[in-house]
Image (cartoon, rainbow, N blue to C red; front, side, top):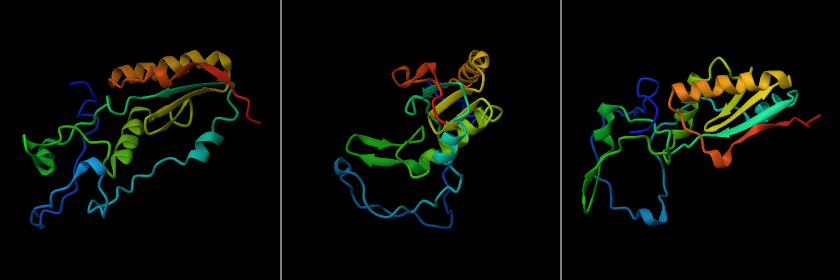
Length: 175
């Protein structure tokens, strides 16, 4: 199965083992789910967009990349798969990978890209979940920075969405 190596990141559920299982009422998923979430909020900080934009203003070239969030699947921790089980008319199922509709999916994905690009963030790259920006204060450094980013993408098997990538770079026009 394509996706991120579970040794890099794996989605874990935070479950209170003292709680007893509760049979949930039947839901109609065609209209979405409303109501309260019982999952505790993941306090992993997401970057502030205004700070990311400000950090790019002095660069001569920028390349924008977008990862396939649904293709770069984050596996669910083996012991937690049974906790995600649900029953429908055709059988019993569980999630093998982290569903991106979860409350804390963004924080988990941000944790992943922070780990992959830890040495580049703030220097040659900025990342916000599945959106990545390779920057270069000097034109001459841009290809080296892109090569470094692509090397890490390849190493961690992260796939890009080519229809949302601008890899030729653009001159920064912000003052």
